[in-house]
Length: 507
Image (cartoon, rainbow, N blue to C red; front, side, top):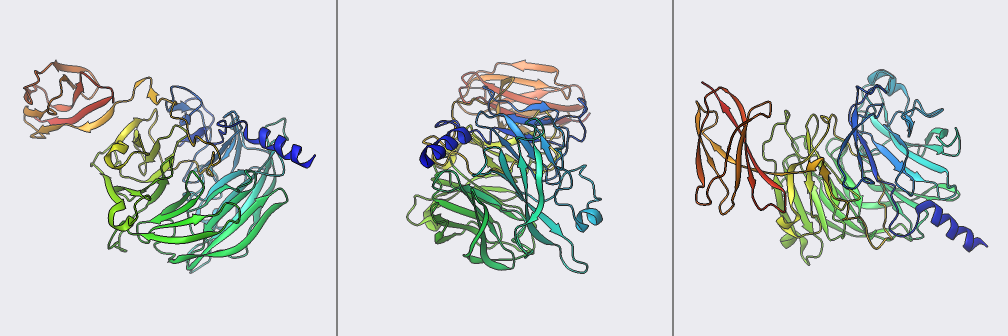
């Protein structure tokens, strides 16, 4: 009878093979009210073709962001770190004042108008003992006068059977540890090998140990601390990176620019980390710089991707000597202003097998790694490759546990990414001199036929040409001052590439 109950629970909790969709909706943007004129945006991977869409989120994010869907990919609830909000964009009963304390009153104004700070410092996990229950793990800022702020670790509990299925917060701000020396960021979790329980790992700061939790049907249980083999410093390690389990559940990676990349084998039955490897991405990191780093795995668990503000690296874990042969530079920030720098920041793997990367704030596009399972430049990293329906605000993605660990397919490559019309992946087009008094020159890609278009700042077509294949340098002579887009669309274009340059004309 016990075996039948467990099998029934597994089926209703996670659905059949290939149907775990807990991470299929991402809510994003700075949306401060439920007014239809004040919109954020969302990623809904249930929609095929997938496209980011303007959406009435109804509340704002800072950098804390967590959401959870049911087995069919329907949004259950979400949190911005200071409130728990149901699928109708309403704060749940008892769902206000998450992480509320003296710090929140003194330094954050005591209001949840703009979310709660702390990248990757929140996560939602289904309760192994209750099909309607969910744990919300969240870290809070703790203020000590004349000392640097510290970080505590708490949980709240949501019962989705209450309030007519919209959910109610039945426990709130329960401390997980009397110590308050947790690192900002790096919170991550993964299923136990039984497919039901959870392992949670979070590093301490000013220490060389991991805080480990096991969540099972009887509740949350602290496990023995484990050695990180790396001392994490409050002033540079904390708030400067992320940590992720591999999609196959066999490894754990933690990364920031200052401490480099650390990879461990992970046993999902015992929760033990072993076989520590330090992989050097930056030979001589400059501790005077303020740089955020991010880590993410390819769906096939072969490659690790790491970012700094200006660089993206791919690490091939199949190499026998990773430090010598396995680290490859994939991309460098191309200088785009949109209107602010589209520098590299946080990465997250989508259910569509792509890795998305957000800049820090206030841009109209995200970066995309289209084929993260491919070696080297074949991974097809495209800067500003995914257009957004609204301007982004503070950089954040929902912090999900690693779903689909025991599924044969870790993601769904059939989810096609479009934005109304197909998304054009941008490549730089050389236009010079720039600025210009009117006459400039355009260098077209070799061996590619296509159409050249010039559009003004309003998008109006000013000029269109069909250059011959041998015409690789064209002259542009514009009569009016202004800012123009110079676009070249290849005639044969299965990869949806557009070459783009901007030209400023001053008369």
